[in-house]
Image (cartoon, rainbow, N blue to C red; front, side, top):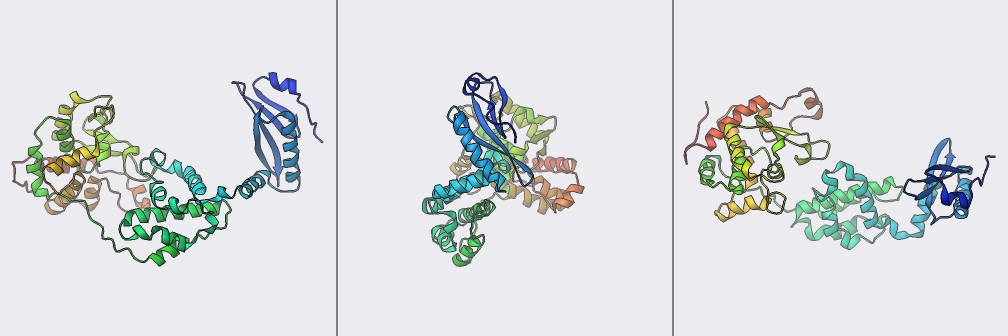
Length: 395
């Protein structure tokens, strides 16, 4: 039997920073700032487990010894004290397995995979707006397909994309619940889809400007304002979406190449690589014109220290009476590539920062076609900056 009760109350009050053993696996971890934490080490089925027992002085020496004795007894019986404590907490507070609580737990576990810890894509928003107000207090083990159907039916046909996201994220929460050992129906979301039926919603594409009309619009952006300059640069490089363009920092530009950081690219965190943008002569001219207006490192700043809003660009086109929107210039470019060039499919898709083929193929084809894209970018700029109404036909 290992020595027990080696510490004293007087020693604990003045103990230096470090680890101090009370014996039988009970330790006091003293921090440099004076705070301290009790920790119990036990072995279950040949595996060491470390279990926090609370902070000192909230948990005193006598209480720490009582707690350690209890959990050591469970470990000696072959039961994992950490799992036993979790089970006790769930049993004592049934709301701990409510959908709201499990959703937050699932979100915390998934944060590392999401950009800006899930804030960028508002991962929780569909659930918070359309699911949790009705089902948040329901124990996750009680939720079935009828609950999900009744909750999402009001938006199933009218807000199809939001409903789809809510359903997918609810499925993730249910899988997380199962991983916690809770008895949930993993097929509940699929069954709910069957009950809801096929959505009647017809997706609407973002309105795009015909590529032949782009030169006229580009020529009309003749004021040296941040809005005009930003929209010009977006038209010249429609492969870059609005966010990375608006957050463009001067240090991202090196000669003829602008490197968009991974965090600004669309896609799941860790799977959307940084994107190199070849800058044509006209794009570099626009950047040079905007540089004197840069602030805090941003090429297109707003007056509050951030960057210009996405709506700033859209509203300019709306005020002009145009149906097309900034994102639609991606379609303009892609159609121009298809109708006026012989660019290979892979290169044309790379112009829009699209991934093609499987991950295995991309692993072996380690190129982003930068040189080919620069040639096409210059030709696109030649078209865009041509005389109003004229189209530059490529040979």
